[in-house]
Length: 106
Length: 318
Image 1 (cartoon, each protein chain N blue to C red):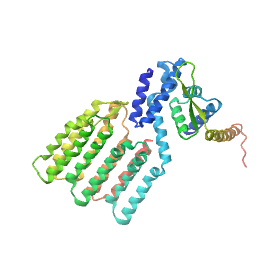
Image 2: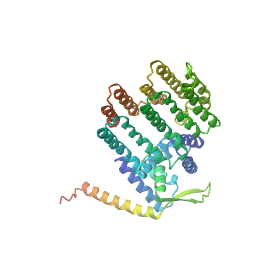
Image 3: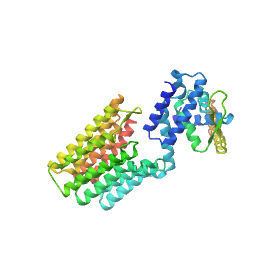
Image 4: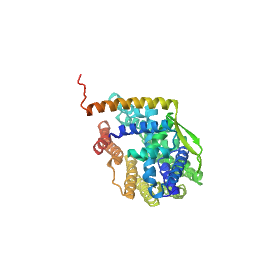
């Protein structure tokens, strides 16, 4: 997959993981690990999304060790995630149609 | 790699890539938490890098993101190469000022540095000093033809660099880098004597204590590279002074100083045992060819074409 496209997909996955549950960087790294992506790029993406105002960090209690910081989506982040999901669904539907031979030659 | 080593290496790379202190502290704090959480989940030292990434690659990716954001924020930086080319053609075709019209290309690095000013104001003077020195040198040289001893202006580069550093001798060494060249210039005009360039030997001590030449490889200072670079730089200064005095060719003999960055790139790559990217050399080769052909064949109106080798080589190597 084209690296730029892959980056976009990773960004979408990161935002969805955070949308489902406020997460620490380690938790996100752990979940993304199954996608076999370059783990060196995850924190830089999180930092950028945070700086661009799509994410916020808040401190949470930790039963065993020092308090952790968890990422959550901001209002702007929620809107961005909807845009990302819509774009992804349009793209994957089109790809699926091509793969199934359902191309509309209008 | 254990937690302490990991965080130290990450901090070294972030320092090497010139992240500001606030960003470094945020990133280190974050990785401190990531490692703790990894350890709680039975990810130990040997598999740490595999699970959370390597300090070098993380720092590189962070740098890419920061640089991209800065360029995105400041469209002027992205436009500056095009503005420079347009101005250069207007000055050249319109008024015949191919030389010194090429000086407009200095707008590219200057715009970049000024945009960075927002992020690290402390280093602005030090980063702009090479361009200020070059501009003053060329303007005085071209207008009054006194290339010598105007070249002494280049000592503002180490003088301002020392001030940025956390060195306990920084004030005295920085002032020495201004005063000693000034004494040389005064001696040239008011109390000339043979071999008065020996005055520059007084700079050896401030250069040593001011840590004028510091190089880092893999985030750590490399004393061997520093020592050899100092020898090369010192030799170039001596060659310049000796040949300049004997043959009176201060301009364009100063071009030999472009050999210094070429040497540094070559030596750093050798220390790292990596292949030498020709792309890194092309800007210096282009400047040397531009001046040599421009000066000796009076070809400033066409020798700018040598600058095209920079993007051409980059495209071929890519």
